Amino acid sequence: MSTVAVLVESREGVVTQPTFEALTLARSLGTPVAVWLGSAPEPAEVARLGIYGATEVRVVPTGDDARVVSRAAAALGAATADAAIVVLISTFVNKEIATRLALATGAGVVVDAAGAELVDGRVETLQTVFAATWNVRTRIESDAAIVGIRPNTTQAQAAETPGAATLVTVEAALPETREAIVAVEPVPASDGVPLAEAPVVVSGGRGTGGDYTLVRELAELLGGAVGASRDATDEGWISHEHMVGQTGTTVTPALYVACGISGAVHHRGGMQASGTIVAVNIDPDAPIFEIADFGVVGDLGDVLPQAIARIEDHRRG
Amino acid sequence: MRILVTVKFVPDLQSQRSFTDGAVTRTGDDGTMNELDENAVEAALQLKEAAGEGEVYALTVGGDDAVAAVRKALQLGVDHAIHVSDAAIAGSDVFGTAKVIAAAVRKVHAEAPLDLVITGMAALDGLTSMLPTALAAELDWSQLTLASGLTVEDGTASIVRHLPDAHETLSAPLPAVVSVTDEANKPRYPNFKLIMAARTKPVTTWSLADLGVDPATVGAGAARTVVVDASPRPPRENRVVVTDTGDGGTRLADFLIERGLA
Image 1 (cartoon, rainbow over the protein chains, first blue to last red):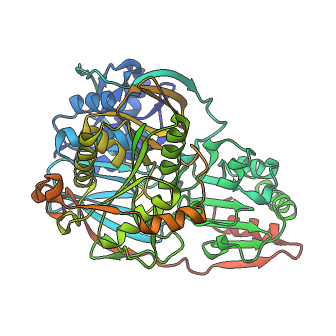
Image 2: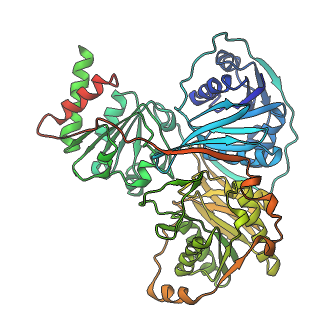
């Protein structure tokens, strides 16, 4: 079994759910090792990585240097020299790291993958393209492969024989770069689950008129994250971090609820691969209804409170 | 200020997009300049206008139809258009494409130094967002990607970028490769005068030989990835749309409960 390296994503020192999904996928491709860039993880996090199958956790002490793409790529490269496959989570920044690493190693890269498997010794990946209207299977022809996997496309499962991952420190010579980080202003973590990882997303668009009270209430009830259309973020009703769409966050939750969103192709491209799609819109001709499993033509102000009350009733039994 | 903008010819978002033999179908009928490249063109024009002098080049790589992408850029007001076209480029992966674009950038740069290459944040057909990074690496220039704001002063470019966990400000010396997001600006519309002028503006066409690129290093043969299957996803089945007559919310909730989603 060849070594499959997984680049760990963490928030405030805690490993994120997509990392466990990536480790689960990595187990089907070979022997997973986890790569951690930055200061050393807490023992509890190392243990959690072990539960999902990481045999080693390789720490590259980069400090804040990992914010510069070429340095992060060099650090990842130093820790993955023996790995035939590198799996990372397909974020904008990781796609850049993957590109730099591939240029250094000659690896073939597929990003935004919804799955990967070995076929005749080569990695093949699955993606959805054209606003999730087409399925594409890609084969990586080179010996080394890098796969960027979308959150929520693999069900995270603990390893059948979870082991204790060994902590290993890898020293890497990081290159001097022209790019300098002038300022970093952290974005406060949103309440609840981050959009890209959420199993349920409730989004509001122009039809909300800027009032997200009901959207937030339904999201909270369903244990989901709050999303928005480009219209809504352009209006300044909600911050850009919430934007679902081709230039914002691409989501593939089990349930997507579109409230007052017409469903322009830009938006559909960011959510069309979701499991179940539900839409509420006052306009019967809204294109969102063409892709909704269940649609209600109606006023958000009538439909959402009634739906919320019905779900609460149901839960009370 | 001398700036080169890369523009891509892609199928119109509203058209029926498809694959032919493992590649995106691109035809003149429903193809256009990638929408997100309009932000790159706009950023370049604004920098030139602010500097009060300079030249903006638009460059595209692709078959005969791809010239439409640089024509659109001319309509928006760029000064020069370059179309790199060669049968050997077909089937290139991002690394092959970056190699071709880098060779063309070097050729322009050799005539008179460029300050910036500006790209869009992604092409709306492939959406991988890898090209700007690959191009910066290939050129060995500064890399400033995903800019929602861009300023240039005293030989240094500075950008602001909005990542999910932080808003970063980065700076780097020129020349630099900068990719701009759709938050960076509001692209202008072509006016009648520019549309008329664009009709007669020349488009420079270069082949791989003109660029000194070995055809064996690009194209399908050199690609590290290959599309082995592409098929339209089946439409969702058993879709239901109801009109709210007083019980729309209850029916929606019942649907979710039935599916085990609420």
